[in-house]
Length: 276
Image (tube, rainbow, N blue to C red; front, side, top):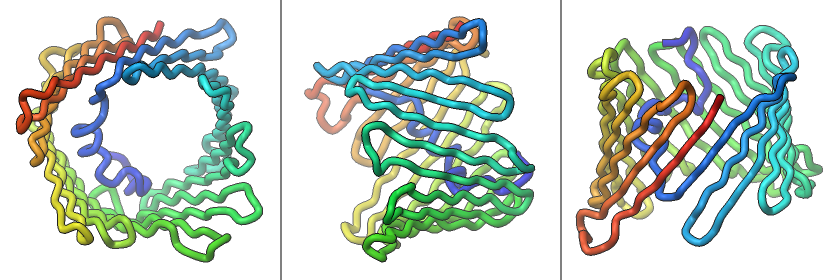
């Protein structure tokens, strides 16, 4: 466990990663190369049905400054400049997209032993201002995440969250969508030696009175091979196999079936990530 409570986005992250990370029904290929000057170039292509999306990301690190420039198939240019630790515990992030003139955003993050704060503001005449903060320790934390639109004078987001962590259990409770959605999740480490864990998430919508329950597990067959599985109360069952066939290079295959409609074809996804 880390020293402080972390950022608001860390609340429930372990359970979310267990239940949703790396599951996909698309075909994705990613390759990263490094130049002699330390520039990392990552090219990726994703096939979604008959549609193929591609992008190229160039990352340059100079001391504590990281610059990411990404170009996609729609000729959009995404730029992110991250300054890490200009002061102890502080991180600043500047991002913008060309040609979208309203996309500019400045974010400041601050991590302390008893607090984690993130605040961002859009670089426009009438910006959206976001603030999230968590207070507590590495055992228990209480946080909030709000966004305010200065143009309309309305809050566009208002979430609160509570997290609890000990050596092998992480639990969280969040209220999202301005109080309409209640979400509870847990992550339990069964065996650190084999990376075996179980987790679950329950989401309740007050407006529709609908519950969504998802449970999942993961287990390492060997130090290089991970298997994961999950199922929800709507009968959707998924499984994933991920193999690291060389350092930092991963092959992932995943599938999903609707157990309430077996006659429907299953969904399969493939991902190949190559790093030298």
